[in-house]
Image 1 (tube, helix red, strand yellow):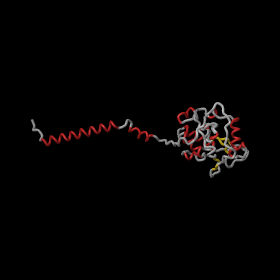
Image 2 (cartoon, rainbow, N blue to C red):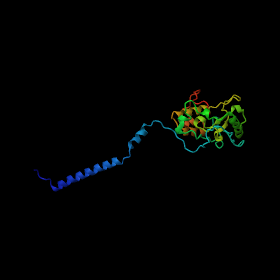
Image 3 (cartoon, one colour):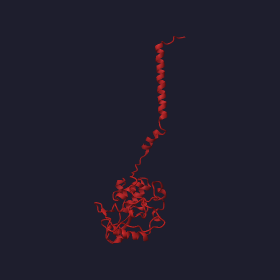
Image 4 (tube, helix red, strand yellow):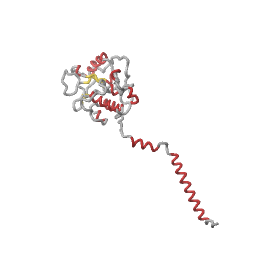
Length: 244
């Protein structure tokens, strides 16, 4: 039988064992306190390759939404609205008269059942010409539009294919023709192609509904660039042709 270690040596061995035990406890506690899935959040962020623009909530009015029957809506007082124009001469509405209005029936959660629905969506919610024709005539007076009525488009600022309200007066304006238009030739509205491009981007998940709505309501001429989208090719097919 070998000799027992000296007392001071036995004390050193005990201290070493105690330190090892404490270290093991600390490691176990640290593992136990780590939130479940803590590492997966970083992995999720790393795996997300699409940056989806967003827009501030609540800065665009919400209208009544689609109706089974529509009524002619009162328009702003004659001469109370004033067109704005971009440096290139493209028309923009008066922000006080026409800030845009959203349809409560369309949301980010139900795109597949509304604006991105196969077969189209807007034709089933569009007010009839018997309603919009009267509104257009009165809105032209609101804006002081004096050109041929056939050259002006009664335009949804936030188009129906972008979830705009169908017949809220805040979302409709007598949009005059763009520069280079020949009087009497009907509307020439490059805004329509921008709306279709944004609609496609929404349905592909490239931008959020709210971001597209905010961009088109702010300035339709800059909406694509603000959202990081390249302008759609001229003459590209409309995804929902009646979506103005």
